[in-house]
Image 1 (cartoon, helix red, strand yellow):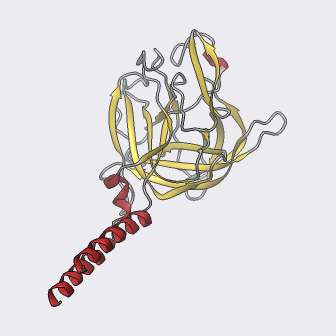
Image 2 (cartoon, helix red, strand yellow; image 1 turned 30 degrees about the vertical axis):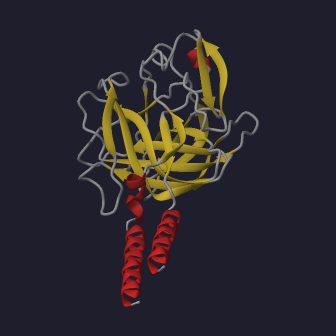
Length: 303
């Protein structure tokens, strides 16, 4: 009887240790267990037959952090098919100067949607989520870090197309079938004066079956054109006291560029940007699974 009791006690201690470790390392779970794609708008990179035979371009997406500074942001609208907590993001782009170093920090900002009204198209409203993702060696304590990989060499004057990935902390909670607007930008610090970065255009020939609003909107030069929502816009901003942009004025719809993004006539279609959103298993479900497994083991040992 004593041996059985001892075995059960050891199992109970194991249960406590395992559940404690899972709770303490919640931030590492997406990497440990793998992320599930929720939305994927892949980049133009001249890769037929899988995609379009065009390299695309990097749309200027750099915000001057100075107080009172003005400029314009590029924002893309999207929806998810199921309400999700989004835990990581992948995006594509490149510095816009030859041989430029990678940005020290990126900012991911999400806005709710203001419906179209008369001649004013739908556009971003209020900020609903914000996160910063830093380059290795440049982040604040606890700030997520991004990885970057060169995936091909069209896109910018630097001759690079880079794929970036990083965790969203805090995670973003989105509701299904609800329009949102996303912007990804960099704000150069004093060690990178003059750095500019561009967000890459989406490959419109590759549909995204995960999106509830991605659809075939036409053909151009024998190529299918898929578009998510109404397409990206450019909107003016003014920097506030914290250096973050506050949107101002009316949005300007953005279109693909003939020659770099597609054949003649592609500029008749609204542009989407290249990014992907991911969801990771909830820590609570993992803990419950661990509890169940260890409880079953304990029961069998007692018998």
